[in-house]
Amino acid sequence: MKIAKFDVSDDAQIEAGRPAAAPGGPMPRHVAIIMDGNGRWATSHGLPRFEGHRRGVEAVRRTIAAAIEFGIEALTVFSFSSENWTRPEGEVDELMGLLKLFIRRDLQDLHTRNVRVRILGEGHPRDGEIQAMLREAEILTAGNTGLTLAVAFNYGSQNEIARAARALAREVAAGRLSPEEITPERLAGSLDTQGLPPLDLLIRTSGEQRLSNFLLWQAAYAELVFLPVLWPDFDRAWFEQALKEFAGRERRFGGLDAPGRS
Image (cartoon, rainbow, N blue to C red; front, top):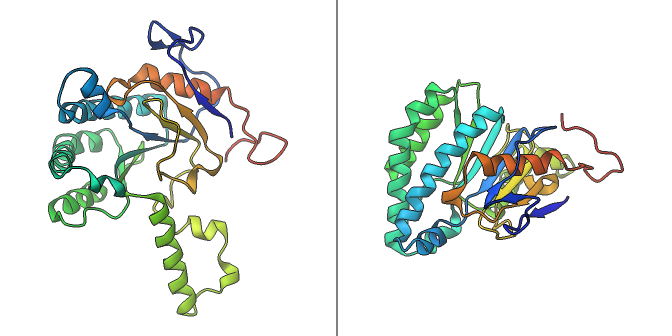
């Protein structure tokens, strides 16, 4: 697994603060994004953190449109982690309000554009309205055949793996499964991402280089690309830059050859 971090001073990669040419070559089926940098963007512009989150929602809209244009099969976005509940209560309330607003304003448009919505994670532990809205988004778009938009909400990968292990343990305890039948494939089928294509490319914005408890199992053979752009400034051109980097990778999956992903 090769990791790339782009430096804004590298003229071969970035010209005048913008990414280089459009991608060519193989395209990923499944792209995941850690959308990092909303707060730092707001601070750098002398604005309240909420404005950074609001501009981040606009970046989500641009990214969905670009994913559809590029023919990406699945796009997973890390919208709210299980650790984010430790943030100040007022900021959490603002984030929940933005999520509700996004669903109200964008769900019908996503449906019209043939986007299927999937929700990863445990949902909201207290807000029944958000739970109902997320469920409505999944039901309304379940039959769509275009881009799958997977939204990781109240999601943590270690918790996801533990929940999958508990589900399999219950099957063993009930006598429906033997311990020897617990394979990596069976465990993967118990994760929140079951049914999605294997993860090919994971992008993180803001220049940070860590996974932050996001898709740890799924990222085992994903290509990782770290971009210096703060999330509210992420756009089609930055997406292109990440896809161009992916296209230039030689993917080995632990072997000497670089087989394609079926």
